[in-house]
Length: 335
Image (cartoon, rainbow, N blue to C red; front, side, top):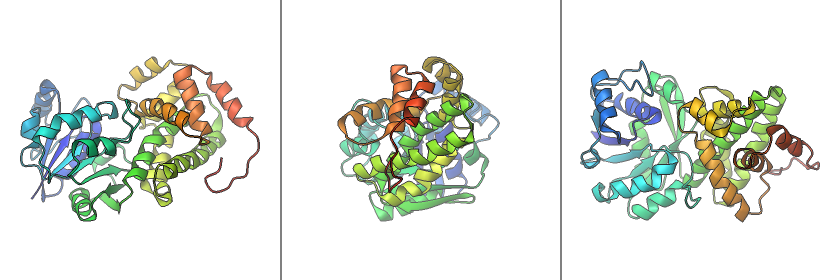
């Protein structure tokens, strides 16, 4: 029996707990930080706040007790928003054995340092194996059991394969990778590009601009990813191209919806309030704005998104500046 604890009872954490509970080989615990909310989920046998109408298996153990959630777990799966990820690793460290693999399904950066999330895991759990689950996934579709494929990348091949088998069941397919950094970059940066596409769609600028932003945006993701040690093939896979296509083109994407609202003239605060959930692309833009200042890389689309979100540039002016850039050759990863 695989004892897996999912930390984070939002839409994605709940959906992953549901998927894990489908396999008879797994024993699943779902932890949430609000005791009252967990009691409501227990009562309703459903997470109505995030996945209304989706039943939870009675086999899923629900708790708000962090120490209890960590007891006897074979795998930890952290699904906490990126802004709280580092502090959460510190919280569970006293209760986590050195032989417990640490996996996460959070996409983003540590806002304080701009570092990738695996660095926070390494700082707190230097002896534990670790990995990330990422790809083109909407929580609602996973919770419904619709066909899904993701990438599971980790520091230890055997451990990563074993954890992937916990998730790989029924309509949920896992592909393995050792490129943790590349998978992290793909998952974090596609959110920025989804905001960009949402803005242009909100402005009514047509399908051509959407396709151009996605294609040239992928070149920027790849360029940055290679500069920090990612593998080129990762960015053409599920955690790169796959996640980018999904997040940029479907209105289930909160980052795309946020961009649509910005394009329609809403402020950042108004747009995020209307979306009603964490918009990771905004946090990723804040982190990338600092990182781009340190690197001499050509990332014009991401820079313009940062100009719009962080410095109040008019979206139409940002697009005009992108279009007026000098002609360049469309070479490998060249903008």
